[in-house]
Length: 115
Picture 1 (tube, rainbow, N blue to C red):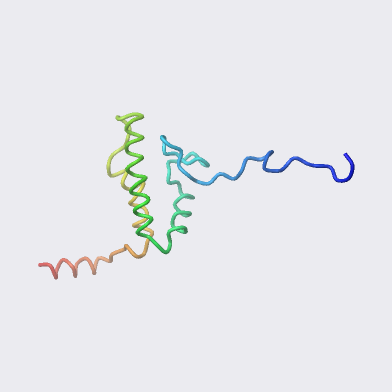
Picture 2: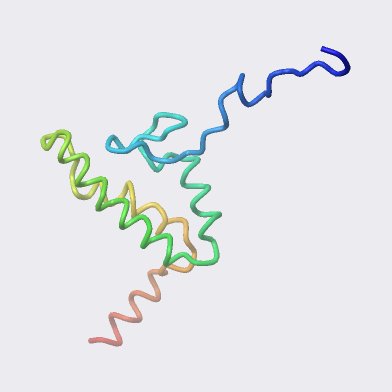
């Protein structure tokens, strides 16, 4: 070859950076192998849906529905409890999304007003 020799592209030698996305039907993270959503996926989802937290809940509710179907189809005896599945997909953003936190004084005031 004359002039500049060609080198193989780096992306051919090293696999592309894989995002923390679910592998279906197992619902494990493609990158780290932890149950999805893993810690990194949760951080990415919180950042992505920061301005529209309701959309995050809708997205995760759809994932929960799909995960229950997939995991039950694979092995009905180890799908997990309903509470565990709910917390895995929908419970965690409620603890991290400020718009959905309700203080106990607010909750008590609402209950008193309804009495």
